[in-house]
Picture 1 (tube, one colour):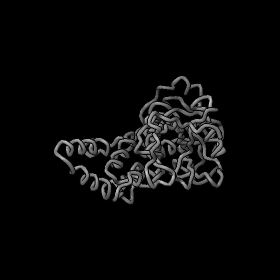
Picture 2 (picture 1 turned 90 degrees about the vertical axis):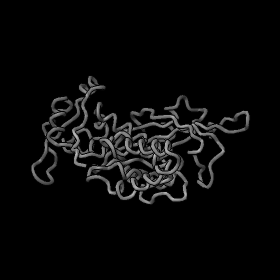
Picture 3 (picture 1 turned 120 degrees about the vertical axis):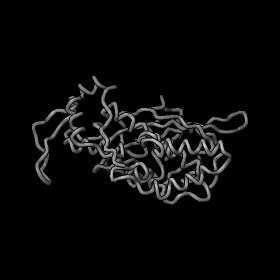
Picture 4 (picture 1 turned 90 degrees about the horizontal axis):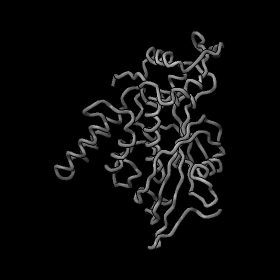
Length: 315
């Protein structure tokens, strides 16, 4: 292994550039993410001197660690918070300064080796899944504890925290499915997630991850939820032939919201994004569904078009 990407500063502090990937798939109507270390890490590794570019370095690490080749990827965000990066044992914060470059990749779930597993995304962010109604964790645990946190400090701090909670958690306005990172960051600041290393994390706030990987996951989900409102990226997660029901459930899995079926199909028809294959899906229950396929020429023409999914606002 060549250089680990660490550089010494004038104070002998080391700076490391870390490349981290969020690989998202939809399997059996559930959003899934590829993880390492028993679900506690995302595929990642330091930038090496032999890497020709950031993306080439990321692809190299993912393929070495997961044996899963990457297709389309896009950069998410650059994180450079020293206090958010912990060492491997998580016993103490590292003295190194870490710059984390994160990327989003959409794929289809494939078998993995013993070191890599696919996990349900909402196991890490359970308050984000509204498909079966408003998550009970919000009103029974998260919001009461956030209220206690908000009341700490002086009047200005109290007012500012209350405002942030109201916006992120929809207590004074409609819930925004894109505010995933804001909600996680508030939980972190309030010490309600394990990654904050506080004395009293909230036990029901989902599975924790090493370092700042759950923060990166929240960033990826926020980006993806924003993208599906103007680009049909969900097709990258589907098989070549699919039913409209499978398409709808894929969008629901990522958005965490139930969609109005008739409105959803009307939008798909109006946007002329799919075409019939002339074949029927294998019959399971009820009437067999028509198999569709994605019209890639239309998607290229409408890369920045589209409309907002028609959510059912029952919560």
